[in-house]
Length: 609
Ligand code: GCB
Image: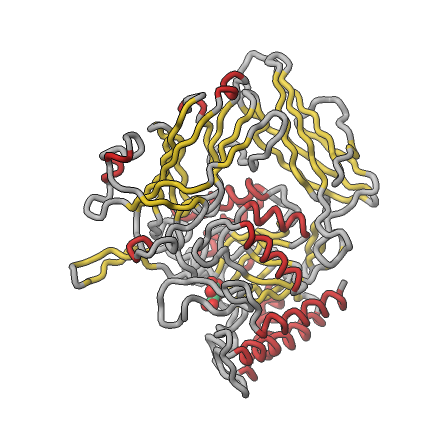
């Protein structure tokens, strides 16, 4: 993990933020000479001389935007660039200038005016660099990004390059076992922003509850300080939702401290309180006397307390039952590109259906999506990009750990994030899985002890070697689909038996992280028959019976259906236009199952909360 923080760019009286989103220039690497962009320095020269570009939206996946298969199925490098202006006023203020990418999938190398600014590997995570020395103030600048979507056995997630025989000779193709399309490109917003010379680099917050008192522990780190100037001092206030100061700084100027909030308004999940997602603002002011500068950053925080034991998971001392989904960042045209209308539509649907939670299957979601979870009180199982993990190697382990390190650095202050998920369906029966996941969990614990660690497990409880390291055990199982398709009378017993087996083996809270059935909207069969809307409902009802029986036993803490919405996958004969296990279609219209789930989730909420 690169040193330093990755605080989301926020405007303040000391910080400017500019968006570099829009239409960029784009081109695929040359097929005959894939490295031509490097040898001919496409990042340096006037692009008009190096070939033609096409317009490409940022943020977006590039795959589905054109009419070309060569773009959709491209393997390897693609190039993006655009120009931007840097105001002269930023030089006058002696600002530092930063460039930040919300995420680029999978790997990226970035130049500013021909100078290498930053490299980053692993998608779905932000990265940034200070670019002050490279920018031209009061003038036009160029940013160039080369993106590589190649997945190997040592990337997170893993993939393989195969060679296939075609009519025109052999061709390299990307293969992967995970079940979602390997969309690529600049997926999330790009920001140019400034900080003062001495700046707030990172903020870590933990909260606790002592009676009526909310307690906020904070730890601030700064950057840009050069000796022998005297060290900067830090002032931290807490503001309520309306912007009133509720706890003023004690005036000591310490980087670490504790704020006591009498009669604190707690952060509660959706449907457990009339004000779910109550957020305070931590206002941090860093002052450097000798340099005469100040930096101000305002971080939204929620006061809540998590606890877990052998049978339950509690928020603010109340046991929680998770009613939710596995999801994807996925939609027509933009693929995994950030889309504001889609973000809000999805939260409206989540609330319409009465859910209180979801898992960010199978990678970290955009910060703009996470912000809404904080604000609306939706509980998040925050998953790193490790899916179908196998072929355990030291290189993979390092990168997998880095993905978690970067995820925790990004999301550690979010009240919505209530568990870390270290993998989805890792091949935990393989030799080496125990040492590997032992290390991974230990690493997560070294960074955060306030949240439980989980994993969406798919191997059976007798062969799995990793569940013992988890605080909470999630299992994925497709009863009535991949096993016993069409035979819903096998579901209840099997779900119950499996959940009980996990519990009695490990004495930890258990939840079902995936179950479901592919369903073609509009396909009807009575009596129910696989792929029909009737079958999806029937399969769900059998699961509900098992869940209700399990809830009575006291260790079962939640159900998450697969999936929130239909999504695109690689081309295979088991997928009709993608995975159709959504209870919403890909364009977010309800299948019959959505109404069925809605009745259950609202009833559960009334019964439990
Ligand atoms: C799983 C995976 C998920 C797939 C799903 C399916 O177990 O975790 O990524 O999409 O099954 O529908 O096959």
